[in-house]
Length: 294
Picture (cartoon, rainbow, N blue to C red):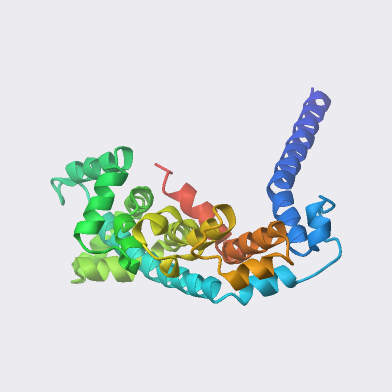
């Protein structure tokens, strides 16, 4: 019985390990191929010789991308957007989650407000009404057009709300007895105790702002105001004639568009790949802790 169980266990562990390794390979190999392609020559990339290792190693694609002033300007706009947007997202999420985490006897209409937020999560106003609101507020062509419409991510709010509800009520009660107010309890007790959840929603906010491109396309009338992902989308996919100057087109004749595309996509994804390992431990605990109920 024990031997049979042991064999079944070993078989399960072996199959599970093989499946996870295969899944990891499907996730990692595209990035490895992208990196190899960006470091290969035009001729090797054009005939499809590149798989997981650079062929005729060259850095021309990265030199071409990093020397372009349009790329650096769009990168600056994206950095500004990530910094401002993450700050606004985090501040509003914390301030909204704290009162909604209170019990009914302390906040009578808590359930109404929670359903109001959940309703907006399920049914949005749509693209055209949102565009009209942004235009009427004269936010177009400003950095706030990329931040204000998504200032309060409801999914992050629900996550932090559940985490706040799981914190021991005795801590808050003892703080009240010592004369602390709500703002003191929030910033000096709830926020420090919620580091895993805050790191998780902070990562969501950073990745969301970094990868977003469509709002930049509809709210910015000039390519010079595009964030990085919108710029890459216009340059690589649509080959926007407003961005491709005569000098740029001449340079592209000597560099494969496939290697340039790979270099720009890899540079665009690199910051997220660099910060994720440092937040991964908080990410897992932050997701799980808010769902545990006693």
